[in-house]
Length: 212
Image 1 (cartoon, rainbow, N blue to C red):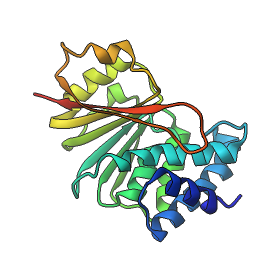
Image 2: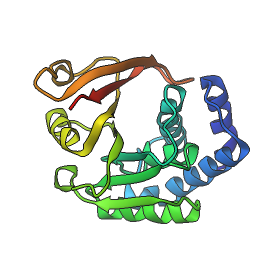
Image 3: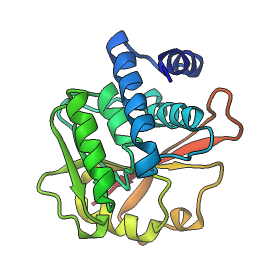
Image 4: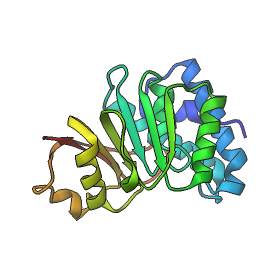
């Protein structure tokens, strides 16, 4: 399947800015996910092509709401096939990406995909996030489709720099654990509601800012 046309259509409808180079890279990445999906279970095997496009557009949504400074470090927890980490790296090539996942096969896939896409300044780490000890200051942490919110908050409290951002990709509702952050070193930064073109339901970003 050639994904380029569908990705371009949805990015345009969604209002995400992109270049021809970005579009070509997203298309190449989509085809790599499709190629290895049968053996690695990277996305749902039901209507795989549509699901890949959806994941790419959803991952790109964050670019509508923020623009990191050059050389910022983004840590993606539970990254799976690279959603959103690799997609964000394609849009923001000057960030340093650290991608964490407990599946060695998925981390290997991401590493090889990044090489084929000529994405530099990336680390792909096969660990549970609780076991990871960052060697550099973390500016942003992204979390998509992962529970254990209290454990994520505890980890982010250790790993983020002061005023760093913890960003959750969520559905329409905010989990109770994220409404009760009084005892955690965070304050609410922003909450953005959005919907994907041609996909039902509302989604949101919840950004928490580390305070100490």
